[in-house]
Length: 456
Image (cartoon, helix red, strand yellow):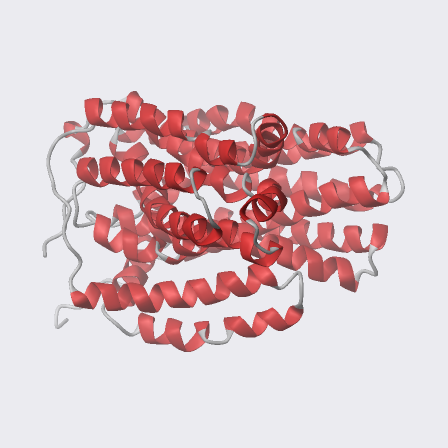
């Protein structure tokens, strides 16, 4: 099958309504990764199941979402944006409605598995939709919309989930996203350019999806369950042969070619490292304030909110600066500011006053806002023509694995540091080191890809 080439810059008309759709979908897809955690106790009690089974209301969404990112990217490079977008948004919303009406646990888990599969398609479509909807000179601003709103959805999920749980019950946690999905579907149907069609995957593509998805699912499941017991890390062992098998097959080679031709290996590593540092910091700060500093849940939530507020304010500025100046320098500067904010958290010691923590989190959040759009633009614009969905799926996989890896690393570092303030300091130092490494990787451009010889 031939690839669908990206539109030529001159043919692109600015469609900010579609950029808004990308931002809305980024927010709800990331919101769904965290909002359900707060409702697990009520779900287990209402559906008459165990807490371990209820946990699959979260894992059932996360596993297919992350595991199917790379296969979805390969498929979407050969599909039309409009039919893929309308199908994915509709399927995501209907699966959410099915989860909200679940009469028993198996129904809920099945609905979440389906929703996670559609969520994988949405995750890949977000950066592609933002990039193709505007002229090249505006891509930094366009990319900053989903790159900022996605993490904001992840951070605000627990707070919003708590409010819905207290006033409307756990089913509202699944229903709250439906109005946003409906608005996004209507906008996409009205403004998405016509053309293209969905293609049924052939057996080779399904086998490739099984290998890549199995490897990522094994790793994700091991990282998700390891905080309860390190023995769960053994689940990650099958990921090694599955990954090697996939890399040698028809699915892995094109992905590696996209990374090599775009020279984005370092950028993907930076995205993973900064996402892991952010997730580790968020986990440790909330844990330390409530358990070691005896702060209330409200005070902790308001303090942690400094990060997403600063990120939301700085995100548009990062996109504008990337369009006006060099996107790599803006992304590296943003990562450096985040690293500085995280580093300043390490020596707090006993002085964990809420203002002292709040301004440091705001500094780190402002850096993440400056970094998000430019680094996404660097990855997407560096992709070969016709492979933007593959590039988008790879960077989304790096970010998702970082969000999952962060709490697991934070838990291990907290234990190695002796727990308490010492363990928190050790974990924050690890998060700051990951952010510093990310800034270096972004600032250092990759080496040009080797040119093919005449004989080749």
